[in-house]
Picture 1 (cartoon, rainbow, N blue to C red):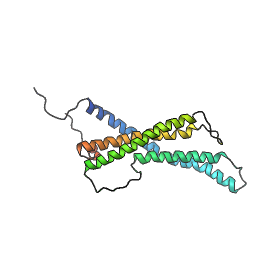
Picture 2 (cartoon, rainbow, N blue to C red; picture 1 turned 60 degrees about the vertical axis):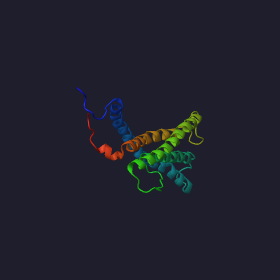
Picture 3 (cartoon, rainbow, N blue to C red; picture 1 turned 45 degrees about the vertical axis):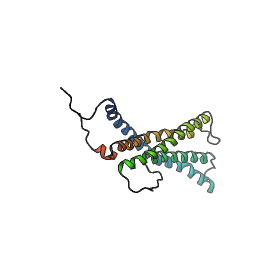
Picture 4 (tube, helix red, strand yellow; picture 1 turned 90 degrees about the horizontal axis):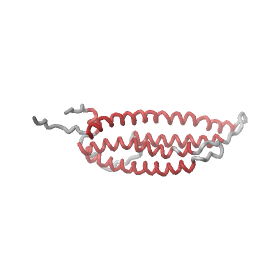
Length: 193
């Protein structure tokens, strides 16, 4: 007999149904980890900054030179982690010049934005790799820390943006094709053939 007509369930659909839930779990837990790291960095940042203040205005402790460099390192990491989270949560600065659009038009506009973030992410990965390679065998002047520990923040930020923007671009592409916003698609049960 003939098979009943229904949605195709070939390898791509199987791959997507298998891969996307795993991909979403990875990005979810990685995002959760990143959401705690700025608090951790700021908590540690308080130590060298406090040492700088106390040594500058009191004679209780000696003046430590490495504290300024350490504070700078943690500030850079805090900013980069914040930039990673900004992409994850779509919290970067955005100007709305369009009226409320239909789901497909909105998804198309978001895909253009996703491509711009993708381009920046690739620049961060490529230039960050070279930046880190340049600093690989160098140490900081004051604290004598390996400089790659600070420089690696740039390529890691780029890779993280690629990870997060990939998930968002997938959702926007799916909305562009189906016309149904991603959140609604994810809440609907999948029909099995």
